[in-house]
Structure formats: structure tokens, C-alpha cells
Length: 151
Length: 151
DNA sequence: ATAGGGCTTCAAGTTCACTTGAAGTCAAGC
DNA sequence: GCTTGACTTCAAGTGAACTTGAAGCCCTAT
Picture 1 (spheres, chains in turn purple, orange, red, brown):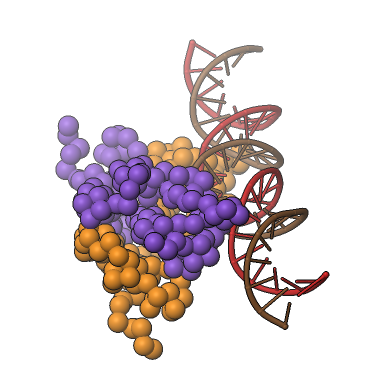
Picture 2 (picture 1 turned 180 degrees about the vertical axis):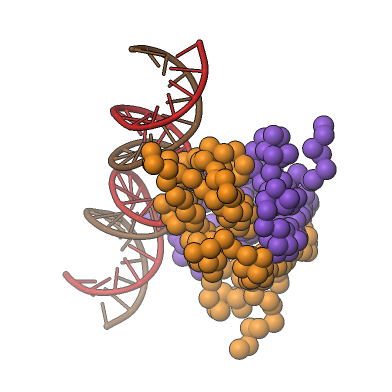
């Protein structure tokens, strides 16, 4: 079973060598060493790195990613089922992110473009005192749905 | 026309006062000053701030946001058409981000969960030498479509 | 035998988007 | 008149995710 040098892993994964060393120091990937001290990565590390980079695209921190990768077995190459489990645990996160963007797009269409120049009457982007009294922020954009003002 | 103190803007927008001052220093918002030197924001600043925060959710840097806000008029309150134009210029960006996530989700479903343990044959997550020879990274995940290996 | 390329460590530096702290001003209320 | 709270500036600090630099090791090729 041939292994990858850091240079090869870097080329294949698209991550800088310094980033890969950083990932190792943060426990995101592992390596063994040759007799002269060079890192050797197993081939499935390529998949781990792809996973890390993909998850970053979704806006996840390395810490979150690291803890997700904990669910993979340490002592053997992850199997189909291992990755499947991980994949499924990610779905809700990705779905949520898409939903957020979708909401954002609709609100931009419906509100920023709506012409309601008086913010008092803008029910979408910033619902004014009603939401202000609830707490913080333009929350209609970032998760809450309108229509819960009374609880 | 009543104006907002930084405290009011902070409460309404959900951004910390220090962040709002930072935004001003970065040219994302503007303010006038009272005789005693306190900031006063026009009401449409609330919309600007909402916009900034919304755009950050999409993963945009303040620099990108700042340059987008440049398209709004400096010398008058932005009109319906101004925001409409801005909104429309955003749509492709949001659509692209959603498409990215969608691709990511599908690839996770289809690839990370696919059981193809041999990376040589994994056509999705890391297409191996074919893509490696093209340049960098797990590019199928981050924008390119497969099937362009020949150009 | 020496030059080059690829690797090593470790400390320090960078960028972004803020936050924190110190010291001060101002207006209102008791 | 004195305190309180909201504001002011400015410099420095923070945390995440790296990058950069310096100094050195090891193997191959000329």
C-alpha cells in the first residue's frame, strides 16, 4: 500500500503543505513518519482533506470539522458505512445552509427590491420595533420566521 | 427626519456598537455628528447594516460588500430603484452559492457515501490524476464540472 | 563533492473582523 | 453638585486559519 508524501497530498488535495501540517497539528489528519522523519499519509487522507475543504465551503470551522471527523474510526481505514454515517450527519447542516441562502435570496428579492423606503413598514428586512423588542438583529433574515411576534 | 444614535442602530440592526464604528471606519456606513460629537445615522443606514450582515451570511468579505455598496448614491437616500439594482446584482452571487452547496450535498450523498474506497475510481470527490494534472484541488466540488478534462 | 529539490521544525508574522480597555466628554436626574 | 449612562477616541488585543522565514537534514544527479 503506497503512501503519499506531503507534496503529493498537497497537489492532489489542493491544500498548501503548510496548511496540511497545520491540519495535522490540529488533529484533522494523521501521518506516519519515514526513518528520516518525513510524513507519509495513507491514501484515505486525501478523502479526509477533501472533506475538510468541502466542509469549509459550507462555512464550518475546523473545530466543527475536527469533531465530525472524530466519528470516523481511528484504528482502521474508514469503510463505506463510516463515511455514509458521516455524510448523513452532514445533510441537515447543508440543508440548513441552503435554506438560509434561499431565505436570504427571497428576502432580497422581496424586500430590498420592494421599494418600502420607510423602514417602519418594511416587514422583511428589518421589522422595526416589533422585532427590536424581541431582541437582536434583522432576525427575519437569519433564521426566525415572521409571525411569532406574539409569544 | 429623526436620526438614530449608535445605541439605537445597534439594537435595531443587531450589530455591536464597536462593529458599527468599525463599519464606519471601513466606509460601509456613514454618519453625521451632533454638536457634541456623537454619531447620528440616517434611518436608511439600518437597511445598509442589514444588507451588510445579510451579505456576510453569504460568505462575502466586507471588502466585497463595501464595493457593492458603492453602487448606491452617496448624496441622497437610496431609492427603490437603487436597492433594486443592487439586489439584482446580488442574485447571481446568491444563486451561485446555493448551487455550490447543492453540488456539495449531492457529492456528499453520491460520493462520500458511495463506498468507492479506492480513490482512483472515485469520479467525484477526488478524480485523481486526471484532475491533478489540471491543477489544484478537489475541483469537482468547488465549481468545475466533470467532463472538461480534454480542453 | 557539491548543488538542488523536497522535506523537517519552530517561532513569528499576516489578514480579517472585530472586541476590549483606558481615559475622557456630555446631558439628564436626584 | 454629583452620579449615571450613553457616548467619544485610540491603541492594543483576540481568534481563526493559515503563511513565512530561517536553519537544517537527506537523497539524487552531475
